Amino acid sequence: MRLSRLFLAATLCLVSIAAPAQKQPPTLVIISVDGMKPEYATHADEHGLKVPVLRRFLKEGTYAEGVIGVIPTVTYPSHTTLVTGVWPAEHGVIDNTIFDPERIHPDVWYWDFHDIKVPTLYTQAKAAGLKTAAVSWPVTVGAPIDYLVAEGMQSEHTDTPSGSPYNPADIMAQLHVTRTRESYPDAAKTETAVGILHKFHPTLMLVHLTELDHQEHGHGPFSPEANATMEILDTEIGQIEKAALELDPSARIAVVSDHGFMPISHRVNLDVLLAQAGLIHPKPEKASARLKGESAIYSWEAAGWGANGSMAIVLHDPNDKAILAKVKAVLEKAAADPANGIAEIVAQPELTHRGGFPQASFLVDFKSGYQPGSALRGPLVTPSEDLGAHGYLPTHPEVRSTFMVKGSGIAAGRDLKVIDMRQIAPTFAQMLGITLPAAKLPPVAVKP
Image (tube, rainbow, N blue to C red):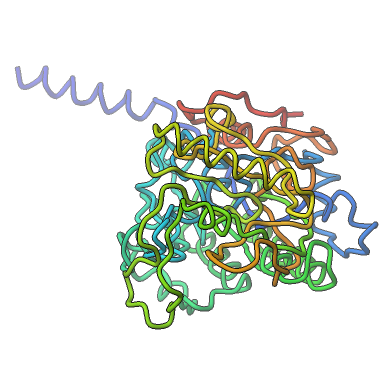
C-alpha cells in the first residue's frame, strides 16, 4: 500500500511537470483620452497638430475613423460600455451623476463599482488569473482590481467613500506619487501608470487621462488650448507605451475615448418650463442659506436629468398618463421654437430600445450650439459659460469617439471605418483570451 501511494505521488508529480503552463496573453494597456475626437489623430495636419505617437498608431496599427457611442455620450456610461460591451440600460451606469430631482446630492457621480450590473474586462481577466490594474478609470471605487487608483471618492448617496479608491491601500506611497482629491493631473496619472507597469507587471491596465476634456469644455474642440493639451497627451501616451514594451515586447497598446465634442454658446433651462407648467415646485431661492441635505423644491411631478448635451425627463409616477401628456405638450411646444435649439425628443420605449435612460419618459437632444441648463427659474435660454459640450445623441457625427490599437498580432494600417462602441470590449476580451457573457456584438477585425 505504501509503495502504491509513493508511485501515485511520483506519477502525479511527473504529469504536473510535463503539463505545459497556460500561456499568458500579451500585456494589454488601454489608454482613454477623455473627449478625444478621432480627428485629433486622423486629421492632425488639418489642425496643425504635432502628435507623432498617435500618427504611428495609424501607420503601425488598426484604427477606426469614428466610434458610435452610447446614450448619453458622457464619460461614465461610455467608459463602462468600453469595459462591458453593453449599453448603459444594461450595465447600470446611466449617466455621469445620479438622478437627484430635489438637488440634495449635487455632483454625486456613479463612482462605485457596485453600480455595474454585468461582468467587466477586469473582473473576467482576474477570474482567469490575470493581473489587473487601473489608474483613474471611472466607476472603479471598490472594484476587484489588483492594483487600483480609482477615480472619484464618493458613494452614490453619501459624501463618504463606499469603498477604497486604492488597492493596495498604500499603493501611492509604494509608487512615490502624490495624489490629492483636488489635484491629480494627467502627468501624475502617467507617472502612476508607468510605476504600476514597472513594479507590478499587470497583464491588463486601464488608464484614464482627462485634461483634454477640460480644455474642450472651457475653450471648445480644436481650440489652441485643446490642441496644446493634445500634444502633451501624445507625449504621455508615448511614455506609457514605452513602459509597457519594456515590460513585454509583445504588448498591445490601445488608445480609446468616450465621446467627441460639439461647440456651444447657449443653455436651455428645461426645468424652467417644467416649473412654469406646475410640474416642479421650487422653494424660494435661498441656495446659500439652505442646509446641506435639504431639498431645493417642495415637490415634483416631472424633472430633468442633465447629460451635458441632452436631458432626460423623469416622471415621479411614470404611469400617470395625464402628467405624461402634459410633459409631452410642454416639450413639443418648446421644440417648435428654433430659438430653443432642440434637435429631437425621444420617448419611451424607444429610448430604452436605444440603450439609454430606462427610468426616463423622454430624452431631449439638442442641436450644435446648445446644451441643457439646470436653472429652475429665470430665462429659458441663457448664454453658456462653456464653449464645448458632449452628451448628445450618438447619431451626431461630432460626438464620435476614438479607437486605435497597435502591437503584437495587430494589423498595420487597417482602417475599420466607423464602428460601434459595444464592439470594443469584445475585441479586448479576445486579445486577453477571456469572454464577456453579456456582450452581444462581435469584436472588430484587428488581426493581420
